[in-house]
Length: 588
Image (cartoon, rainbow, N blue to C red; front, side, top):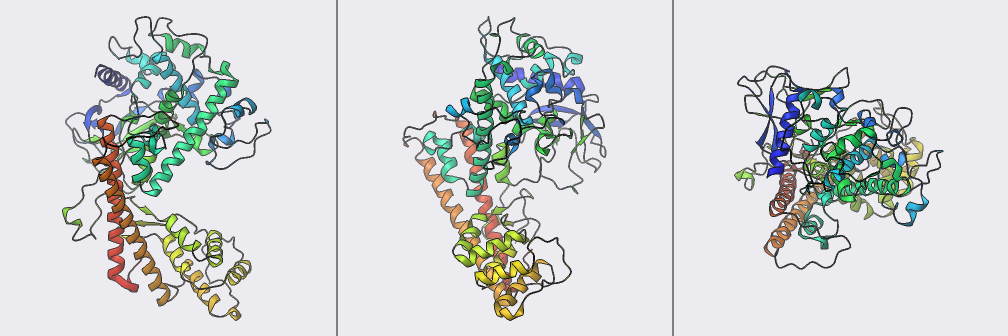
């Protein structure tokens, strides 16, 4: 409790350092816990500037030069190593620096002694490393026996706090970060045997959410392997620079061991999750695009609210000409009143992505009439979706060689994967990509005719095209069906045929029912696991067992349950619409 009060005190002092108009304040009682609210007694003005964070108070690779060795940091002249920003599973060619190709999760043990460290780091890795060094230093026992700053005692002046190059700023900024991320799935092992929460995540999460969580875990393990290798091969690069040495000893009276600090996996995970959940985009001229990120004090306390670009009731974040960041009120005058929470949209993310990347899911007030009338205006996240990639892959695989040929055709036309159903905008519907795949699924053809068709029509083309592809009609009915499908891609035909449309609708309804059955089964399993929670015995796991607090466990359970129920409701509403409309039903 004392630590929490200290963090709040520090955050408010930091806010005061650049909250020039006093228009926002920190609250502990928003829908997500801590957040920002509109201060004062007046409603917000149209597009009013609520908060400005100057470039000197941001933490990114530019300002991190004060704290970290420049050889670790990406720049315009020396971009981050391709490995550090590669999609997991890819193996980019190493640059001429001689760093050998490495795969995620393999840079450990003996390989650490053999492989060169891929430098420069990515922005994510570098900032996470800086935070981890700070965290490690805070954990070092001081002479008085304490292990962390509590925020008690006198705080530096506002002019000192606003100076991003000052040690006091770094202490204050990072002191406002969460002490832990115990509701984030990456905080837990992927092994079901490693605890109750890992067991729930492994057994009850919808498959797509589970895949997204695993991708985030893989990114973390990739990044940790790089830092671990850096510590092993180049420990001198972790010796704090003069500025960071001053910052880390400013409150400890030379209590830190010298000359370096050992970064632990847990501290790096904390820093990594801080960056992953709190960073914002800021153009810095870096390549790849992912390196253009920054941490912004106080602004990062604003919680997420999904909104479209046309939503006049949404706050927005803007870049300033001097590379700072500003938070502006909604364009609609009076959209916020005194005490209202100040939020902005983190991106067009569905619940599964929010859970995997940020560790939260937006709650939805489920209508009591949902059971009897499932087709209603959606009152949840406007970006909600259910992904059906695995199911569509299975259906094409069941068609053997013909399915393989159709998959190739979808890839060539740019329609492979990303198949979804949506509750919003009304009415509930299948995505255009899913419609195209389902129609092709029910086009009867031989693999030979598909390959001939692909060769004749030059698979790599730019859409839109104003006429249907030229087809060799001597191939008969098969190519005529395929021609009809191609014409639907170009908007030249409404559908392939009534028969094809009826079969595609039937498959969509079957897929929706499968989703409903799957989510019902997972909800039942979740209920059963909760009933038997205290009687379950855990087998020995390869990773240490990490159990969440009762409060964190309840939060994770609620998020998993919300995702399962939302998926069920979305599938049920699309099924109902499709069934009622028959082949005349509009797809979207």
